[in-house]
Image 1 (spheres, rainbow, N blue to C red):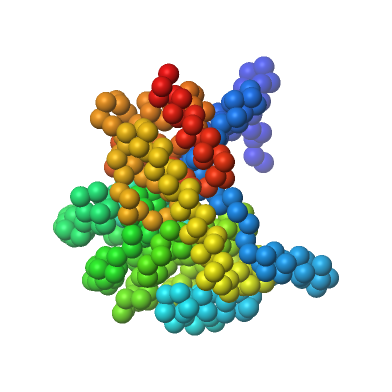
Image 2: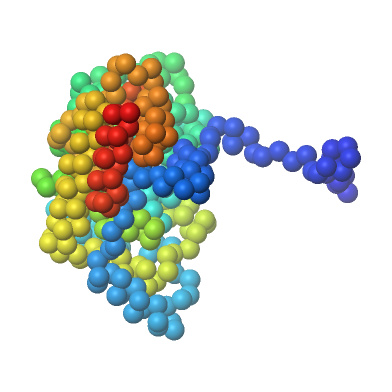
Length: 410
């Protein structure tokens, strides 16, 4: 018989410790900072958030109507297949053919996801053993690092720098892999990449994708391209790494409806790759969750068929006006930025007279009551940058501009 759990003296409670993996991560920055902002709002300070990339506009009318219609059906409320319903997978395949000219077999080369964060978890579980190495961009989406740490992978950062248009330095990548092989250390299993890039706004480049496919094939490293920003202020050709010959052999691409279809709270995304990779990932996923609510899948399928006019209105015209105001804020704060950036954020380098980025962001938060993101949360290469989200109504953006003008005058 097991002895009872040890209690502190005086009956103060159980001495239970969390798993050691929690020592490798911190609470997500926006969760932690959001509490501070919520407290300020409770005090009546009315903080304007230009921090989080959560689209504030609704999905298409057709998607919402489809959700409502099927939610009334008595036979749509049961468990759904983890691999997703055929209607959704077929819509995802049509979407890739229409916008990227990529052919995908909806039966076995597509896996619907409950958002890309879930995909990061399942791909890592499917391909990375504890102790294996993962290549993560710096700066980059923090979840690539945090989930890899939680699952016991070793993180090795590769640099993204403005001098190289925030594209990977392939000489550095080759050197990293060569040195690792020479030492006989644990292998690299994944390389995370994200174009159009968040947080820097760098555009996707076909030449970069070609080099990544070649790199992955030669070193037996899976390249995972996270591609949710193709439709945000990106009026040129929509690029996918799966357009490159041989990419399916070693690449997985994520695509989320959160940004492109104004559906962040719906938690609908997808991955596309070869059929064998999909089966590995499904093996993990099927042991963790069940399929999304059927009416939501049907509504998402409808949204994938949105017209070009809808995308133009929802993701180009609206964000373009906000982008102009974000650029005005950057200029007021004397930050330098590349006007060719795409996506739903604006990334800018802070003036040299600030000791660190939080000296600026905390001043803006507490004096102007505007919340913007310090770039250090994306890695050390972001430590002298700020990021402004375009996900706020025009009137809030205009007010943020005026508040910052007053802050500067004071």
